[in-house]
Image (cartoon, rainbow, N blue to C red):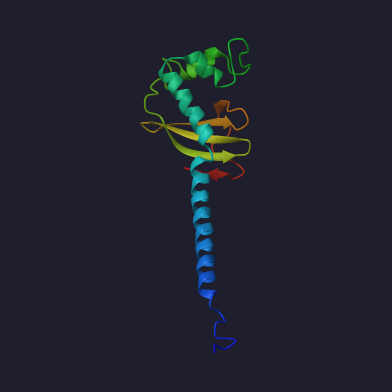
Length: 151
């Protein structure tokens, strides 16, 4: 006849295995989630800048100008199309947009500062507003309040 306490603790190994599996799964999901967060945190803003350079490469300057929040019907007061063409048109120093790549992406308040490398030690810092994805020149060389640096 078996004693009263002979089976005491028999299910402990199974419970420990379940707890260990759950803890490892939660830690792994947190690590993967954190990595994905930093990789895709500024994804939309980076995509907008890539789209801007694709439009410039296709010589579609009106559509590229529209990404700055400016149109022919409602041009920007402080950045008319003539100034845009001087900065980004075929006669500008930035006309060769065949090989720009985003070197650094930094969240800063309501927007993102994207450092675009054109090669030959030429860089440009662009600002992309989070709420409407409008592009502009960055008002800061670096984020004054810190920020999250992604690349």
